[in-house]
Length: 206
Image (cartoon, rainbow, N blue to C red; front, side, top):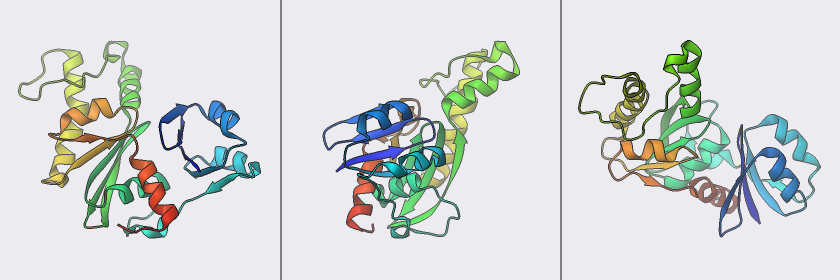
């Protein structure tokens, strides 16, 4: 079975060998006739794939021990994949979830890197700058690009570290290269969500 994670802006497939990141249209057209196990946070796409006879929703949210209300199935899968640590999904939104001994303690959401850039640009064209993943936090910024990079990435770094403490940080998503350098020994793993989906299929708790 091919595994599929359907996000708000992209669709991701894993065949056991490689991950393909596609637009919704590309992915649905390419895999319509394949046997696919999926999770989905996009209601519009979910309504379209109901007619795909070989596609199966493998969502199994009850496996995760959590009292978080409204936790998305993608975050549930990611949390099941690590069992202990902090998982950051750096996509169109940046989600953070904290796991301890198989229990989901909670988490939070920031806009994604692209959304941060667009927000600054909407204020003034002079603020439409690139966010530098290599920004130094050892000195106060003295130019606009550094100031914005410092504000965005510094806030992420500080808040995550407050709750991570000695926990391992795992990072996934398209902007993982921006986020992972903020944390010592952070591990980038694009298969995290699929590992969680495999647990859902096998009904394996942390």
